[in-house]
Image (cartoon, rainbow, N blue to C red; front, side, top):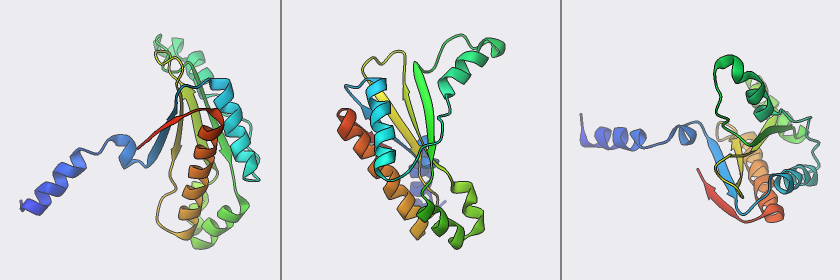
Length: 158
């Protein structure tokens, strides 16, 4: 194997799963879940978007855990908010009808039992480097930053 290929293989081996999947993360600390959730909804609405009823992911895990012999909770609170920008959706659709799978956009908000005072945001970046993907990623980043500005300080990472 050439040195260049070896260097690429070593680099790729060091990428975490969340980086490879395009999942972004932002921690708000100090933060309270209720405040951060309200800030997230406000940030989505400030963009002129209406979030759908949230997916109560943490509640689903708590409800199904006993049947799967999962007794230790992963989250204290966890929800996923879904929303769609008609302008971005139209751009996605015109670029490629398969892009229907990239809508709606979503952002998760959660807390962990062992991390009092920290609220996490996570979202999946839109795939590709097209105008729609760039617009979607910029929108998600604006929403995340506005949430942090209105709910606490941040620690941005990938």
